[in-house]
Length: 188
Image (cartoon, rainbow, N blue to C red; front, side):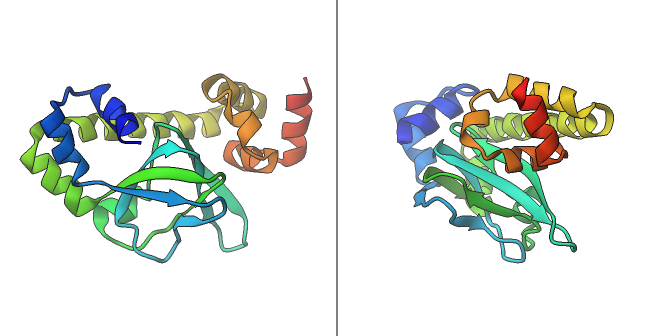
C-alpha cells in the first residue's frame, strides 16, 4: 500500500527513503467497506483521501432529495470535500464507497505541518490542487456547453474503466442526464 502512495508523490517530487518514512508519519491507512461513508454532509471532514484500491463517489443531495454526483475517485486519485477540508467547516458533500476501498488519509493539520517541514511536499500538494481545479473547470464548462452525447463520449474517453465499475444511474447523474438517455447512448 505504501509503495502506491510513494509512486503517486514521486510523479511530482523525488523523495529519499528517509523523507518518505517521514511523509508516511503524517498519513493514516484505512480500509473502508462498500457502501460505507468516508464523509457525511453536516459532519466535519478534516481529511483528504488518497485511493490505493477501490472506488468512491462524492455527491450532494438537494432539498428535493435529488442526488448530484460531483466526483468519482478510483485508484491513484484524491477525494475530499474541499470546502470542509480547507476551511475546517462541516461537509456539504457525502463521500461513500462503491467498492471495498483501501486508502490513506491526511488531516489538514498534518498536511500543513508536513508542508512546513518538507517543502517539496508543499510543491506536491500545490500541483495536485491545481490539477484538481483545472479538472473541475473542465467539468463545469462541459456541463454548461456540451450536448449529452459529447459529455458521455468525453467521460468514456477519460475514464474507460469506470463504465464497467459504476452503475449507469450514477454515471447519468454525474453527466447530468437521465438514465434512459445514457442507456440509448451506451447502446450505440
